[in-house]
Image 1 (cartoon, one colour):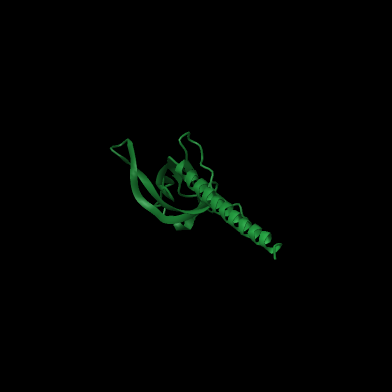
Image 2: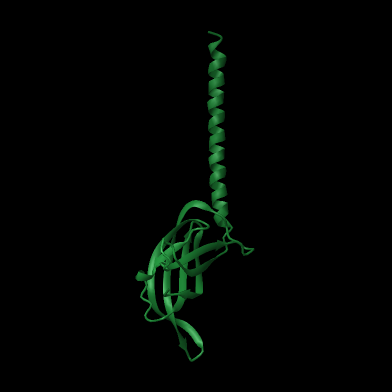
Length: 158
């Protein structure tokens, strides 16, 4: 009977230690995850045309939303799906020299799950209204808040 007592104590001690280590690791992981998004100070967005299929034809506009830190660098993150609200507008000259937003030609939501993800908007989803370029507005919905960005030269046609 004496030989079973140390084994039971050892098992209890091991389960308590494993529970504490597992709990601390989970807490640290969650803390690191939130700290990554705490680094975000602003957003940027790139927009360009690309051929994503097997053919050589342009398929649409590729939107690359980015979260940026205080030094102006991309914040590296992954494994979290963030929604991105997207609007694309044509522009017009106001007063003969100031370019302003004119007509909305696309509105939708895309999702990114890492810092390198891109969103494809097919040309058939865009009513370019005879214009060749416009402005792309995005709002990245991050765990720490919303971040907005504008691309002032977004191609609307191939």
